[in-house]
Image (cartoon, rainbow, N blue to C red; front, side, top):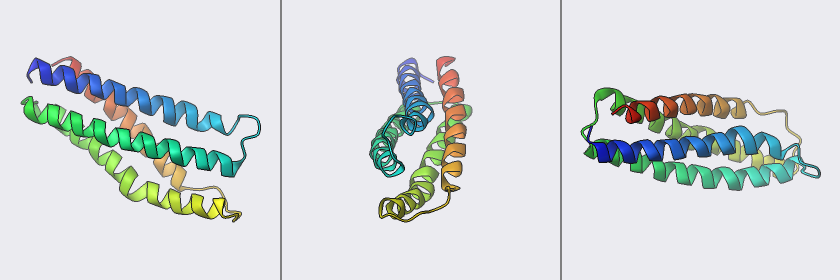
Length: 142
């Protein structure tokens, strides 16, 4: 893989990883522990934050895809790029809409049991994090 493409894709991958770690594994769980934050308030904040995060993730994914495509990347790099992009796509197309529908109901005042959708989102986030780490390491070695 050419050096410029590898450096660009690697830097963007690690920025993406940092954002996921900071938002998904630090901010999201902590906001519900803050004094005065109710479930509806936390859900409203979370929806805004994750909408912004997912928008930025889509842009970062596009940059990585372009850098990998123009950089004549090896098969492993292409596979990791496709995997992380697919994980993000599943989150955006399948899990987030269901979570949004549920949070709409909670925000409307319905008393609902804990959501299994969040477990799916977290599982995908863990897989995405591992894939971003592997992709970043692979690109750094290029």
